[in-house]
Length: 258
Ligand code: ADP
Image (cartoon, rainbow, N blue to C red; front, side, top):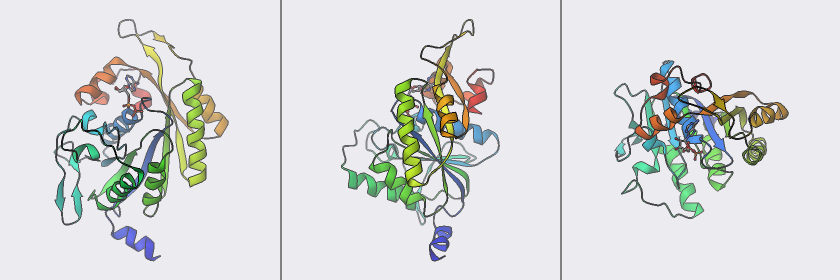
């Protein structure tokens, strides 16, 4: 009971839901899905925070084009970086703490774990409908620290991102085991880079195999949340920090992202 009351008084006391985004491998679109999920929630009137705990490869500041912003202190802790004037999306990432945005983080586990704990305890998020946690690839020490630090505050859910190929799907199988062992509720699996839609003729070509994520979801008895095709407009929007969902509602990537 005391623990619950302390959690209510903490910086996460006014956060309604916490969702971790996980992937077995790097480069499969975990930060992309975290970003588009935040934008999609904002469009439905929600207040969203993203906590980027991918300490060695923080890409969230770049995807919102706010790299180079500084994090300030207030009485309650670190003030996150706001993406818009309405403060509907707020971000915290090691990218804001580095002297130069491209500096490499060469830290051993304990130092990384200490920063994760600080991120969880000391960011003054205020009221949020959702806190999305963008994690590093795999199931490392950092994941265990993140889950252990966050679960004091709220029940956690996880979205797993995979590409359709067997290797990536195999990695997600390991993520599913991680969720089971750590008691994380799996909200579902997203299959990203699922075919390529030609920008000229709109024909979808399955460069890799297709349907691996959906099959895995069925096999594991967890929801399948949708397939997102490779879309050059999506990667360009992310490069330029633009809102893909608002600009390209007719894209075939739109339904799964929203
Ligand atoms: P991760 O977080 O898993 O390392 P990212 O989200 O950073 O992966 O994605 C890696 C690269 O792939 C980025 O440049 C991103 O813009 C691009 N990308 C991801 N998903 C898509 C997609 N569906 N269509 C086009 N580009 C994508």
